[in-house]
Amino acid sequence: QQQVKQSPQSLIVQKGGIPIINCAYENTAFDYFPWYQQFPGKGPALLIAIRPDVSEKKEGRFTISFNKSAKQFSLHIMDSQPGDSATYFCAASKLNTGNQFYFGTGTSLTVIP
Amino acid sequence: GAVVSQHPSWVICKSGTSVKIECRSLDFQATTMFWYRQFPKQSLMLMATSNEGSKATYEQGVEKDKFLINHASLTLSTLTVTSAHPEDSSFYICSAWGVTLHFGNGTRLTVT
Image 1 (cartoon, rainbow over the protein chains, first blue to last red):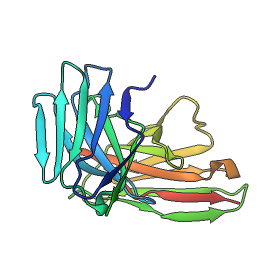
Image 2: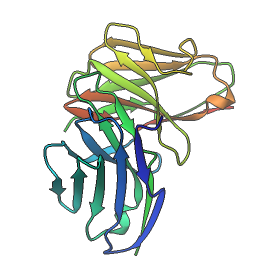
Image 3: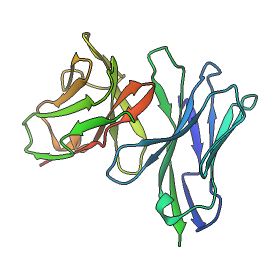
């Protein structure tokens, strides 16, 4: 069973656009929701993360919106740049219980100059 | 920031040989490390959880005798692919828990 569902599978936007990637989870015990960015041939790198006690978190051009009642969270990339072209993974975890992370299926983002 | 070093970044080996991949946490101690396998354009598939000083916990369907994991210290976990075959060719990534989950840069294994 897929613990975290991610959409869309791929996304193409123009430079300056605001791509939005969505994730939904099932387990209400999850309390940590990170987003990872992965470039080809590299390991994922932590981009931004949120805990369920807040509805939004911003770090630079990256924003997470979190809807606890709907069990959904999304990543928004403001003023997207060609260098943001990468694969993005959302994840969910219940911290302090083995710290196992459940990953979404990934979104391939292409930002056209 | 916390860094996880994975080595080698790529390796080519002949069918039937064994390959060892190292994962080190450079500036923090990691009691738990994770090993993933990633196929092209797909998500990370958790293979096993490596706990310092104890046996690894393998996910369903992962052969523990083929993918040997050793976590002998708080900063080092190793994955050995034994008697590798072409179907084992993949991108293997380790991660370590230290405040949050940090990933290594992965190892591209090609078995000929």
